[in-house]
Length: 276
Image 1 (tube, one colour):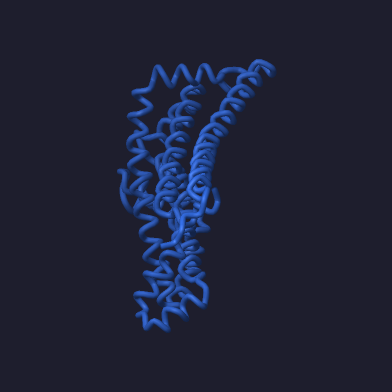
Image 2: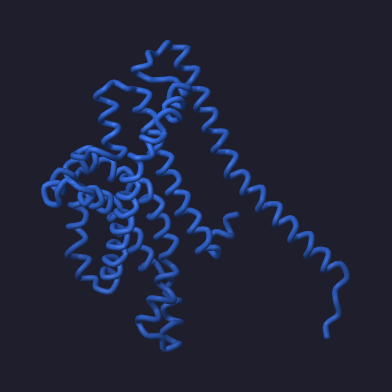
């Protein structure tokens, strides 16, 4: 039985304590720095209003926006709900479709050569041009908003997932062949784990763009939602409500992004550990 090296246990304990302290420091920093940045921006916003004597109907003060957030919280949340549903469903639908298509592209290069230019052309069409077409095709309910959110999520995830599935080291493939692995085993054990970091990079982008897609879809034709409330506030020259609505949409988008980032850290500990 090997003898215990004197002081090894103490050294390991100290190293573990330093590691935990660093984790706490990094976690606190990730929270503190954005909070400080937001406070600085709010202070600069408030002082700019006073310094340049900007009229309230052009740009309200942070205090006026905060008052609207408090007084009309119910209306804001009522309109946030359909936008949130459209964003989440569009996010799920668009990314699922992108993952499936990327898998087909990797398995069949001919399909990629035929269909990828089509995907590029569709992606090049402005969202405001796609939305009316989808309203005509799908009606004026939630369906076209979900479709807009899905389409706007689709292309970045398609590109990243395709690259991730293909960007594997040749020696990994050779090792799997030596072990007599089937193509399916190579895909699941090598390509999919390798593609996950690429996928989550795309998902974090899609978390924000899905909200944008849902809001743009609501501009075309909707009586409820963040997009509809933005139009209503704009037409009524209700600047505090306009800014408050934008703040609510931005907070939801940031929260959505945060959820995806949290899932990424949980699922890809092996990939994120070396960054901390």
